[in-house]
Length: 293
Length: 234
Image (tube, rainbow over the protein chains, first blue to last red):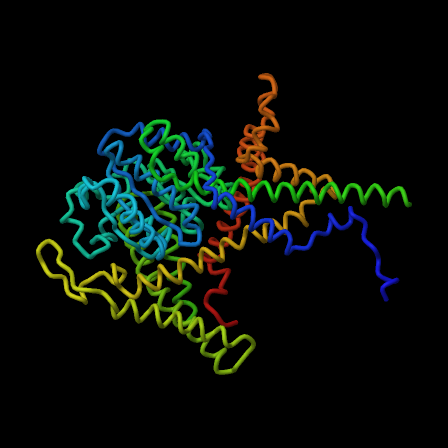
């Protein structure tokens, strides 16, 4: 039996690396930057810088609607986007209105309140500077309703207190009363629905961030229908870089996206190396087969 | 009659919403708003239907002892545990809010100390993150096997994917940073932006326009009663 076994050449072996070895190298590539705290800074691309510039250009006291349309599965990509926009909005003196089209969104908003708003901005008051309105079902149907009558759907905040009790809700009749809609999404309903059902018919500026997988699908809306887009963790890291460039004090604070870019960069390098390896071995084998013929 | 009334409702609602789109004034504007609220109310009931359907499917699987029925027990246990923890506000403590004692039942079901929060933070969140994180390993393995320059089309896909992949890495920078100014458009960063903003956008737009036309034609078929599959039966 042993004589009948076909002996693989080195090139053939490199072209057929066992998937367990691929997994192992991938694990190491992710683990090492996490252990050594490798951080990378990526300058903001135009599509990210545009979102930043939009928030920056709004006058103090502007109303920003932030929609948390994602689940914990994509939180490593999406949560840093929420952190950056919150820091930026409060630096500019804007007011933040948090809602969610996903049932899992309110927990992410609470995480933001507990981890960022409460410790970093103790002077910002619930109901005056920020409000958490919670989740409502309906997806694009909900957006359609909010466009004509916001308080028909949101009568209370997430804790059940009447919205009329909060000063920042005065004057909010429809989505048209917001200066910017910032959707942090990872699927449907999400960024696309906010653009189609709120931004376009209501002529309201819509921006936001999404996962890297979803980002290419949103490029057709840029720049006319969306002010900009944060694509995945990289987009979040770019926004962090823009924020630090404008407000250097954030350099010494937690930069979650930039810190997480380390493992992502090394993972990308491992995938790139395997793609090169696979193609080099494939081309050598093909040339050899041609010669044999 | 069982079919005629739903068909008439569909026709009337569809027609009114189309008119409201082009004439955004009362009474059509008001009707559009009311229909949107009806939709939101119906969407809430979808959760109950969803829960009911999940129960029906998995209970049936356990009862029949079909393939992998043991996993259905895990699903049902998780479903009931989360439901009961939230409904009965297990672990929610009475707190003081604005000088008023907020009792157990008036407290937040996912507030600090609640079982729902504990289950969400300690099981749901890490499990979801783990499942999503596994993608990195499968993407690495799949890229290694699938991205081979076997044809011209595959080669174009390979080059595009490679450029996007290495863009945020130091390799992406060092490969092309030395290019002279007239050739700066060939840097990995610029190439990556171009791929996303031009070829990707063209493809995405073509797909989206195709889908939109399909939705328009399907909607018209529903409104005019040609497509009746949603009524069920024959």
